[in-house]
Structure formats: structure tokens, C-alpha cells
Picture 1: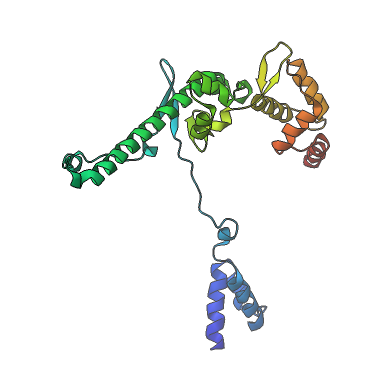
Picture 2: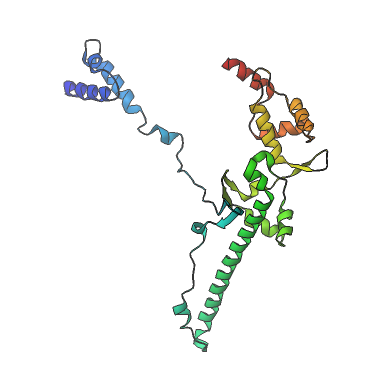
Length: 265
């Protein structure tokens, strides 16, 4: 029984990478093989499951934005549209006598539901098109060219209430050549420039990220220096504002970046 167990343990250890000559040779005792076998059996068969137990979640865009011959085109993703329709064959069987009163009321509710879904889709496409019209520079050149925009701007453009725009943009995603973004991503506050024009906070974050990426690793830019460089571009921001944006993006302070750069040298 012991010999059979040793052979089984040897085959298992050999399978996971232990040389059979070392396992069965005089240097490997029965106790050593038993300990090694116990170690192998204690290992998790699916180690990746301990890191992330949840299943991957994928974002399905509600709107597609594509470049066309006539500019940027916007269309609804048909896969996100609810497949609801009214069966006209059954609807035509409902008469006008008193016995069908309840069914007529339910039929009217079904028609209102279909109408509501149609209005929701029309509103979504209007909002998406208005966003694209205002953020064309972002689509063509990137985050540094994002324009400041608030819900009120879109509400006035399509003559709807801000609360409606807020509901439509919540949890809705847009697929663009630059990636998939939530509609709310395109809304941001502005910093008033020296010339009276406004710069989006998203654009400022992108500029800070670019400055840090291109900096000298031995002499990283401080928050004050970044603020000076942005001011030279006509974007007056305070040092504490730079620090707030930098921390929000998970970028370390200049002294920490300098130490990290020295370690890599």
C-alpha cells in the first residue's frame, strides 16, 4: 500500500514539474514525498477564482456614433430597443359592447406604452445628436478639446426640461471611435479663461495627465509648476485645483513620482 501511494504521489509530482529521478531516488524519503504531495493537494485548483469571483460585466452602448461623408452620424443601437409590439389580430377582435370594456382599457394602456417607448427613443437620439454637435472637437482631437457643457445647454437646444435630460443620460452609453462613454461623461464644468472663453474640467484633467506623462522623471512637475504652465496657455487654475484633479486621477505627488523615477534608474 505504501509503495502504491508513493508511486501515485511520484506521478502526481512529476506531472506538476518535479523530476521523477529526484522523487524516486535515494535522496527522497517516503516522508518527503508525502509532504510534497500534501502541499500540491493544498493548492487551489483555480487560483484565479480567488482574485475575482464575479463574472465580467460588459457595457452595451445605447447609441452609435460614426463618421460619415456628411459629418458625424448618430443612430440608436437596435439591440437595446425593447421588442414590444401590439398583436393587431387580437386587437381587432375587441368589440364595443359592455363585456369588452376591460379589454378596451388594457388595449389603450398597451398603445400608451408603445407610444411612451417611441417618445423615449426619440428623446435619446435628440440628446445624443445635440451632444455630438457640441463635442465634435473631442471626437476628432481627444479629451483636451472637450467643451464645457451642462444639462441646461442640451435642454435649451432641444426644448426640454433639465430633469428629462438628466433621466435620459443616466445609465446610457455612447459608442464612439474613441471608446464607449456614458452620456454624462460629456458634461463638465468650466474654468473661465483669460480671454473670457471657458475650458472644460475634463480638458484640464487631460492636459495635466499629458504634462505629467511628458515630464522629466528626474525633475517631476510640481502642482504649482503645472498651474503656471496651464496659466501660460490661458487657463488660470490654482495650485490646489491642480492637486484636486491630480489626486482624482490617481496620479502621485511630484516627490513620490521623483522617488519612483530614481528607483527605476
